[in-house]
Image 1 (cartoon, rainbow, N blue to C red):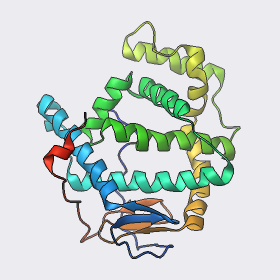
Image 2: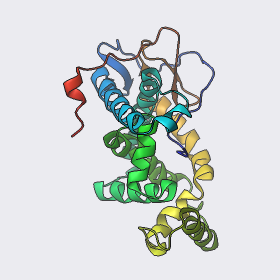
Image 3: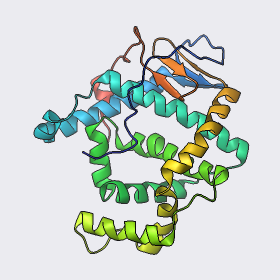
Length: 254
């Protein structure tokens, strides 16, 4: 199932690069003076596993053809997104960049339409790899939306041409076998002008985020992994743990 950007690639284990001091008591990680506590990670993992298990029950054949989704995998990806989001929020504050709830919702819809055809399909694809809708919106896609906003500062000149946007938009109609999309061409144009240049924009943004992480200071509890400052990721390490599941009644996502 196509679901780009939501699964962090496996990387070789690197040495811990912790630039902030913290005892990690009750914390999975810390960015500057902001703590990401174990309960926050556990909640995201619990919701993600519940979504995955519900998806697996409805789609056993699809699940049989994909790599297994484990609690350890979901935890590592969750912590990565939580840490990266905190770094980007700190950089956004420094640069005076804001992301309103309305802007996030608009980005979420556009991202869903052009990645999978719509919100329902995006959330199903996310469930297949262990993301709940709440965290997909509030953490994962929020970080993607901040990528876009911050890249507007670092590389405002990197936008797709009108011809490329039109070609891509029309190709989506063909790919999905539909006559129209939830977003008109004009509605989609601002999103696509950036989205189509995403690789180039992120290449320019990444060094700035490394600087931001070093400036803010990032520390990860060794119980959860090790922080790679150069790659801006939490890596799995021998002895790191999966968070303990919360009692089943707390898994109700309604």
